[in-house]
Length: 97
Image (tube, rainbow, N blue to C red; front, top):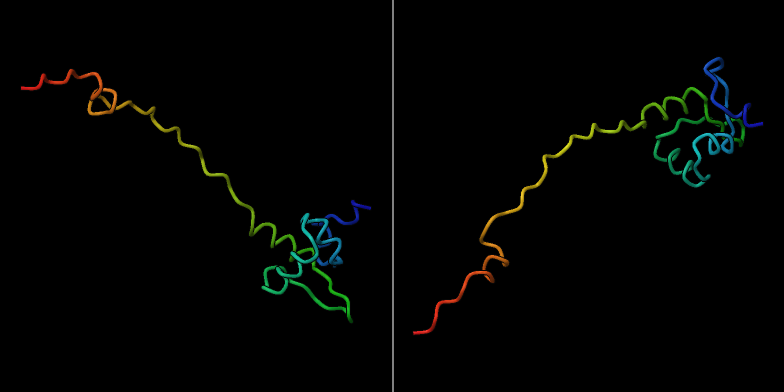
């Protein structure tokens, strides 16, 4: 049954039910309803039923794919010399006059 729910490039005009679209996107019905309300996911009404065009769902997925930024290796941190709390403790105090 899941094979019939997948988005097919062979038939981009295929209409998915809300349940099929939710399964494809791995989101809840309220989330998909909110995305439809905002105009993020296209839909059509067939009588009282709502259908999601497979091509529209594919376009939504393609538009929301995030690329991982390349990780730049930061140079190693150097420890500060002097002026720190440890160097203040190490310095001998001057004798009182």
